[in-house]
Image 1 (cartoon, rainbow, N blue to C red):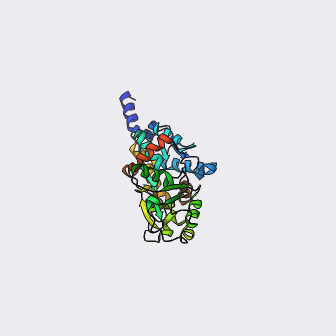
Image 2: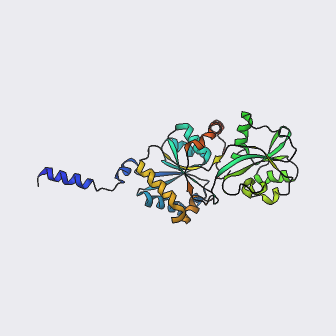
Image 3: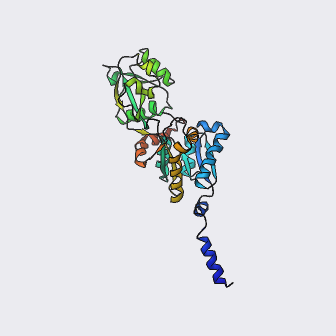
Length: 301
């Protein structure tokens, strides 16, 4: 057979190679970064379930890489040692500030459509902020300390005294017992319960009965929204692979509800779009994180 015919046949066959051949050249293995504090890391079966689900969706090998804290996760994503990471809002904002090499793919939603939270100062009536003794959970709480501290430093929030209680439960107990004039709390952002009474909404309603025992509270200050942390990817990933990953996450709630429980143990509403600009508001807080390196590793506010 003439050589030019053989070459023509080879070129023709090449046109029918799987579309993901290019993806394999660029991304031989998709490495997904996950915090050790994520509940799935305690069970090897759950980790393998996640890997297999992604592998089936994108037709590429997948490896879950675990990190002990946010600093390690941020460094790995910014240096492209992982191409995909399940971030907190703060770890994504910090990665974004460090390298501008990542973008959000999707973010988890609450069952009622909740998209995030706002840090708030809840005060007893007739108490002036400047004189208030305010309880908060601990210094590694994003809603209770990190965001309020940035607001105090920037002049956006004035309080008399911030008192660490050790936990949210202890902070609520201080308020109920009259040992504090207010409490640093959080309110859900988005969702369907925005008209509910304040005790039903503070801390997502977890301490409703206790808070109902106090004087009627008022919101004296609230932060900008802090959106749920996104699943984020390197900008350099091929567009076709990005589209596959997005379709996969969109289909998880209906097609693989058990997988959603593993991936998102704190949120059960599936996934929604996420925009870079929505996390820019945490830039000042992320700068402080890089300077002070607090151990903020939790998946909840």
